[in-house]
Length: 411
Image (tube, rainbow, N blue to C red; front, top):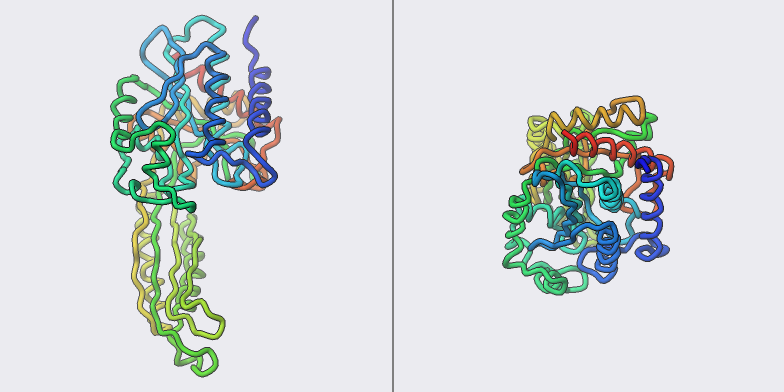
């Protein structure tokens, strides 16, 4: 019997609901990497893959690779991640991996595919425990710096080294995943993901091709003034570190609007943090993102000027500490065109956008021709139990994604 795209899409929805039944509670998804629930999720995934007739292995970084042998050793990879943030959503990452299972079903019942197919569950994409996003895929791409992680502890005081060893990963050999991936002869990497933002919903679209991912400049900014008694020190004479930080944060918003980009102050720490004391120190985080590399550097330079002016106005000093810098990543032109074709065939419109969040696809694009596809997120919500995409829209995106896979496998 001929394969039916709609039936396949409905199976993906059913699998997602089955996964949620044993990995979520009233607070949301609990598939945090390096935890028992995460391992239970991966065991479930492996059982599903083996039932299809695929071969399941793990690499040195703990990434799960599911292989369906093709007529050629040239390979197409489909992937995402099964781990979640604490109290997360049921679709983030899982949609892409479970859609990969359906890719296997689609080809397993129809003889050998023209190319070998891999479905990948990347380990610890979220970085929820140790603050290192895209850990498994960065090991495969060759960019992972294990030394940055080895002594880190999670909120429960568990060291990274101990956490990964408990799940069969040796931190001393994690980077071997890079050569292991190169040996698999990947020619393309495809990833399906929820948008995690409001753009598609606001524009009345369901599915989009994703042509790249924004770069990131992320820093801590320390404002240092002088703590003083809140009742005794006149306003005009204060060296209030918080006011300098607050003024900067407001201007960062205007900066983002100027460049059609995003600037986010997500952390604020005030010291002494006492009701009756003028803040002598305030530290804020600044996360800046855009797809344009020139604008990203210009925004960073102008943010430094903004913070400097605010510090001077309030009589405080300011210093910057880098958290990370990630260059913007454009995806493969040929795959983008195939992805737009697939989206148009399914929805009638070749929608194209870039991603603000980072994804495993960004790491893969450093080594392999890559493209992503997004489906709308209701309300733009993600990393929360309220994350939601209606079943019928998931079915549309899965069908579009299966069309994309067909185009790439049969090239």
